Amino acid sequence: MITAPASPAARMVLGIETSCDDTSVAVLERGVMVRSHLIATQDVHRWYGGVVPELASRAHLELLPPLVSRALAEADVQPGELTAVAVTRAPGLVGSLVVGLAFAKAYALGLGLPVVGVNHVEAHLHAATLEHGDSPFPAVALVVSGGHTELVEVRGIGTYRWLGSTLDDAAGEAYDKVAKLLGMGFPGGPAIDRLAQRGRRDAFDLPRPMVDRPGYEFSFSGLKTAVAQVVASLTPPLDETRVADLAASFQAAVVDSLCVKTLRALDATGARALNLGGGVACNLELRARLSAACAERGVAFRVPSPRLCADNAAMIALLGAWMLDRGTASGSSLDAAASLEDSGLPLVEA
Ligand code: KG4
Ligand code: ZN
Image (spheres, rainbow, N blue to C red):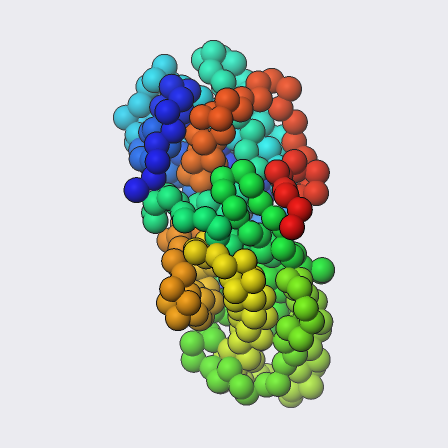
């Protein structure tokens, strides 16, 4: 069960997410019931093998008005029934964030509604709540996506201790770069995940960066270079079995590295739950390994369905509803921040 926010402003929240290349809109009733939830993935970026920021901003601009109309229609909610607008304010591509913020502020102003700015990474930390109910605390959250690899101790909603991040590439970024090396399209994570099911995970001896070091930091760029060296050493054309073996060996290295640090964090903090978020949390091997490790420890394993792992507006509305309950509404002064460091996440020391 999710504890419903008591604030009248949280009764019917319109959530808007535009931090990267997904335009998403959701209507959330009383902070617990998803009345509608739409995600438009911008296909234009496939042509370029990665997200093109300027094209992402333009696409958000075109997609938002019809998506909001459709989300309200699917929710069977009139604009006048909305009680607040929650919008991603940081971190992300600044142009994309600004489009979402400008739209949200204008829409809220037109309807006389409060608008609340939500931290995208904080929303990922809690996305599992929409399907699994309230989290026991303390919890550990792992957010793994194309832009983030963040390990966080969650002591409560709004109280976080930062454990570690990647020193270079994010986990999803490594997947996308290796997929490119193997001649696959963008984004590459899902394709590598599928292919890895057919390969041998010990076929190539790839490094597990940072696992022997203390702490909670990650690094994936050396692993990507190691895969590039293997590819260069093989005689083309690579047959499918070889590519599947390489995909499986790469995935094993990424998952080992993520699991070592995450389990270390669970053990050190005495966490009662593990929350996963971000697109890489869709990965089948990562889910299976962490699920088994949590079961061994008696820790609740909370991973959302793929739709709620990826960038989505339902998690933005969820966190927005909680913030409204705590009296946080930002109004028209709301500003975008591109980096996580500047995103104003409420952190505590040790
Ligand atoms: O959270 P997300 O949708 O967007 C952001 O990056 O913010 O995550 C997308 C990332 C991409 O790098 C994609 O390759 C990766 O998540 N991804 C996966 C899988 N599904 C998506 N990586 C590994 N295995 C998957 N099944
Ligand atoms: Zn994200």
